[in-house]
Length: 134
Ligand SMILES: [Zn+2]
Image (cartoon, rainbow, N blue to C red):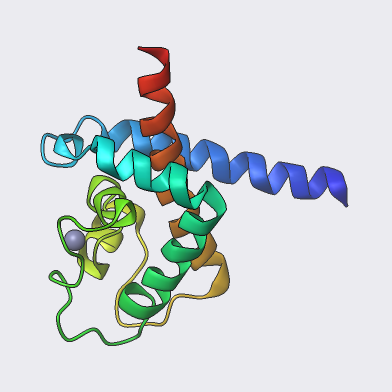
């Protein structure tokens, strides 16, 4: 059972690594980076709190079946998760379909929400670690 769980996590991690590598080759997506104030905010709140915020935004703005303002629901600044959403193409259902093959017009299930949040948090962790190496 544990082995199987580890395998599922491994497959998802590999998928996320692949998609993040493809996104980093997109001119548009690769322009998004966390600013120092975003990193300070993450440090102040703690990474688990940021993950909670990510779930909250996804539930309210992305997971719905019908989103009248789809494509415009994610601000370009104001929260590190918003920046991460643009960088990872999880900003709207159009981008989510194009990059992650999750179809619009249906509610996201728990597994899909977990996946989206994991993509966002993996990107955020990369941004933070990237700087620590410099
Ligand atoms: Zn979008």
